[in-house]
Image (tube, rainbow, N blue to C red; front, side):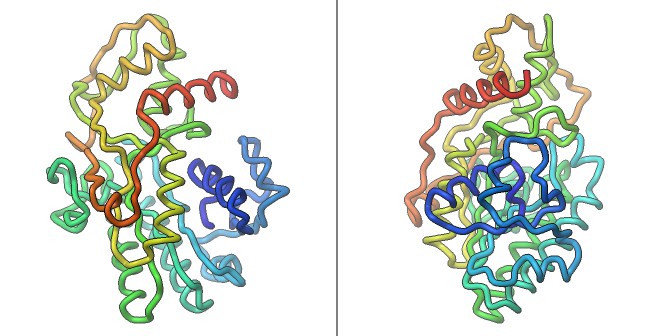
Length: 313
């Protein structure tokens, strides 16, 4: 599994261990760092690798049965706007190496972990999988959106030409314990949690607070990824997200309440806010694999905030 030492990857690795799987993780940090993933050192097979290098990707794939591609160069709004070329180039190099190595090795199936960032800015709400290649991806996340579109296309091409079994999961705004806090590349929820704890009287939110997202708790995400990989390697994308649309203003108020802070909200409309609305159409995933979320946003936020307090405060 690529990206196994990352946020989603660590949770997925734990679930794979529980199911009895043996997990190999290529990483540029074989020590697994000082994040809460030290269990990887003793239980997973960590291989030092730079997946943008063809031979490293081949070494990582050798001897595997299933490949889950989670590795990605991605961040929050500010990071994505500032690094479109770097994000696109790095993600495409990694994936092209991984998919070709998987073909050469005769891998049984490949799970492509895609993103809601592939959808156009003014997509249908809730957004169905059929709109994944309409128009152009949301401009704020253009590097990531275009790279993931091309990953989906290339995986489908390998399926059509070589018969490779391919699963495609499009994730909507995943968050949870162990997320990327305190980084320029952090997403909206870890950023807001940290800002709430650091703020004394006021919390600033980018945009006017009306922009919306469908937030997917990481434990639900992992269940969905496992199910797509096991049950739906059909070269047919499935959305994985919550059937719950949340505006940024409401999200900020909920986090303030759960953190037990007394803060006023300031909306900075001079800052970019990304796609106006994002709401996952969950019907197809439920129909094909029976997937639906088990965590409400407040329940997931409660666990995430508790983890932050225990590990980073």
